[in-house]
Image (cartoon, rainbow, N blue to C red; front, side, top):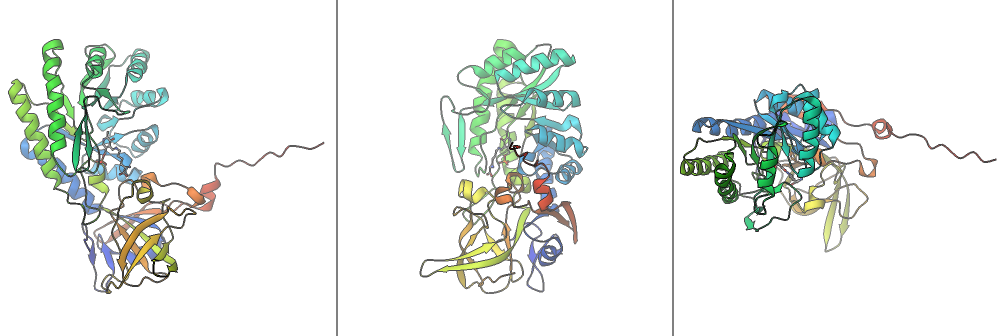
Length: 439
Ligand code: LLP
């Protein structure tokens, strides 16, 4: 079993995270429970930042808050001096409510509404990552209304798609995001924003995919972008102040995954950008990145209580937990794989293989297939590892199951950062049916 961050087995054979006994956490806060190892999040944040510092490169590391957005998380990100990427009015609202510095917020999205853009402009956030021509038009209007020069990056589709272990180069990328680099859309977007009164065009952005284990894709994307930057420099005398290469750095969910240290991605990116700018005989732009999963993924563990069991003779042993696809949709949606253990019996000998079922009314609600465990019994606590990214943030109310609580642990202390929802919370926006009056 692989233990991440500060996770270890204590003297009683319990799983401990951040110096806190998870069995006690389950008792105190109930299950299912998302537990975050704050020290591990801090360590990752520092690795990203320090690598840029070592190279003396001006940079922003923006946490992609879609991976896990709550006020406490945003405040932790602020404490670590990172920037923040938001993709909706809701994520922006969370950041503002948490008191995050506006100038370090970047706003993404392929269909930002006028109201969302207005909110971003009114609040004076750091930049808007413009995705399409419709958005350029909306922003022009709003720039005039608010008499502001709006800081923007242009999201570019470089024609590279990362499929976790390999990369596909397509002439014209089939993506809903961004301005295509090859077919001239990106150049047109530069022309429509560069030196225009409504825009302060800071630079360009690209994001090639998620859960990427190699550096080759980042090199390819950088090269593709620089091919065009050379042209644009000659044609329009435009060269970006900022080059944002997105997120996507892979983490270890199971032993099938073999990630490289985050510093290695950053090193490779910096080296390639340096190589390209030296060839152009031009200064290096600021490099921005947007890690989501790699900052919070393996820092998160979900605790569940084990309940019913069902034996299908000679086929399978189903063991059900008190959560499932409503707190972690990833297995059902992406066939994502996870490792898990019994938090209250970490040293017990593993003697059977069971499949972990969620409690939703859906056969597809299976969290883990064929998991080796020491004969799990009702009330045992199952700890599923690496659930910190896209677990809570993609949680739903399917089957009207309230969302779990979230706890941060660090240095022997636990801090409740999201309360468990109640049944009242579930119906708080419901309005009663007005029956038709019969004559
Ligand atoms: N920047 C942009 C523009 C993105 O679209 C994303 C993720 C990120 C940064 C952060 O990527 P990360 O470092 O977390 O890989 N729900 C899926 C992942 C969707 C990722 C969407 N974009 C999952 O659970 O695997």
